[in-house]
Image 1 (cartoon, helix red, strand yellow):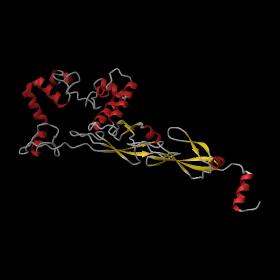
Image 2 (cartoon, rainbow, N blue to C red):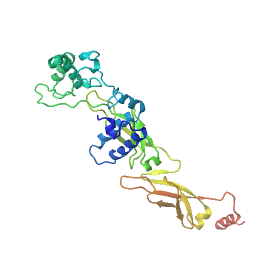
Image 3 (cartoon, rainbow, N blue to C red):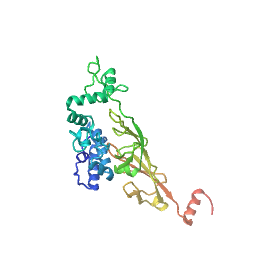
Image 4 (cartoon, rainbow, N blue to C red):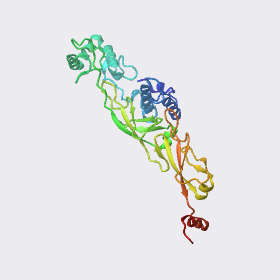
Length: 328
C-alpha cells in the first residue's frame, strides 16, 4: 500500500477540506462504474483506504507519528533490546522493523547472515516444514505468502493464498441522491467508513461489489464487501425504472379552460402547459426529468388530478344536474 498522501496527491500540510476535495475528485475519476480502466476497482479501493486514514483526524495523527501503516494497521515494533538498539536496532529504520524483510535485516545486523538464518529456523522452522510437506503455497496450516516456497515434486507450482471473507452491508439512498450522483459515506461491518458513489441507473436491491474492503486474510488478499442498495420511498415521486411518476393537482377551471401549471421535479418545479378539457388521470411526459442512466436520463410522468372547488358553485351544480337529467 502506497503512502496515503501520495495516493490522494496532497501534501502532509493539507487541510481536511483539501483532503476531502482531492478524494471526491479521484473517486469520481476511478469509480468502477465511471472508468474503463481495468485497474479501476483496485485504485478505488486504494483511495478509500487512504481516505479512511487521512479523513479521520485521529488516524491521520497516528499515521504521521508512525504508529499505524498505510493500511491502518499497527506497525510491528520489533523486540526490545534486539540488535543492540531495541525497536530501532540495526536495519530497523526510523519506525522499527517492517515485517519479515525488516526483521531479517535487523537480525543480520545483530548476528550476521548465518545467525539470522538460525533464528528464522528456530522461530519458523516448523511452519516451513509443514508448508514444504504440503507443497508450495498455503494449504491448511501452510504459509502460501512466502515466495519461493516449493514442495518436493511440486514442479514449482504455487497455490493461491486463502482470500479473506466477504461481508454484506446495505446503503440507503434517496431519489435526489441518485439524480445528483451523490457520494455517500457508509460504515461497513468491519468498522471501516468509506465513500461510495451512487452509480447511475442503480435499482432497488442492486448489489455493488467493493473489492478488497472485506475481512482481512493473514496471507492472501482481503475479501470484498457486497453492498446492497435500498432506495428510500419518496413522499411525492414513485420510481418506474428510470422514469418517475408524480400526481399534479389541477383546479377544475384550469382543466376545463387549459392553463400553465407547476410540476415538481427532482431538480425543482417547472412550468407545463395543459390543453383545455383535460381529464383527470391524463398523463403528460416531461422528457429528461427522470433519473440518470448509463446511456441517458429517464422521463417524468405527470398525472393530472382534478381538484374540485372547496365551496359548491351553483352554476356548476346546475350544469351537473342538466348533464344527469335531474330537475332542480
